[in-house]
Image (tube, rainbow over all chains, first blue to last red):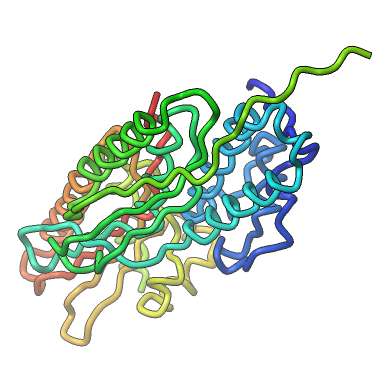
Length: 211
Length: 117
């Protein structure tokens, strides 16, 4: 296993949170999940590995650690307060969005067979698709509209942070396309629009001054 | 009760074998209210592999509920339908004369490691 890079903030990002409601994560806290990631998910904790909410949060936390390091390298030391706040918000959203939420129906010709995807699973999917573009991290995911009604038009709104460099218009379009494609593949949602708001841009750090 | 526990075990195995299913999650709070008896039985060590909620209405109709994880390489709707069909096939084979069952399958995690790769 490749060791994870050290956090630019000097500690694991999730330690910045002062505790979230354990009910959100089947009785586990985001800090416990961070410790579990540190240990390489060993020894296996069935309570975590068999909790869909914990798995969604673990996936997102793992990406956050790697991507936030890449994006914040150099900048965090110069503007520590700003970045702690940004990561705090992302982690709080990961925890909130990992809850099951609403049931999103999937059709079946037999009325006695009821199929659903949880809203938490779909939010995790959207976050993974957005994070997967490279050079950006999803901050918040909202599914706006009544997702519990088949064919009901809905919109998806995400916020994102971007690394300095790429054209932001192109980056937002790439995020939009990845999310739309994932939703088309894995849900039967009637998505009218995917709105992407890039709320933070992380500038490159200053080169170290010679001593 | 033992029959239902055996059926739950059988269905857990069948669902686990459907392509795209990464896991069958233990009966959770969403179905606990309709599966209390099975949850009680599941405290038994032997019942750990019985992860599908099986309950019976007074008329004998079965209700089956399962919560699964899905690999992102497989479209979730297709996997859900395949699981629903697999469960129904098992139930119809076991008791062709039984009242039509109610089958509920919920995907609560999509393994996204393949996305963006």
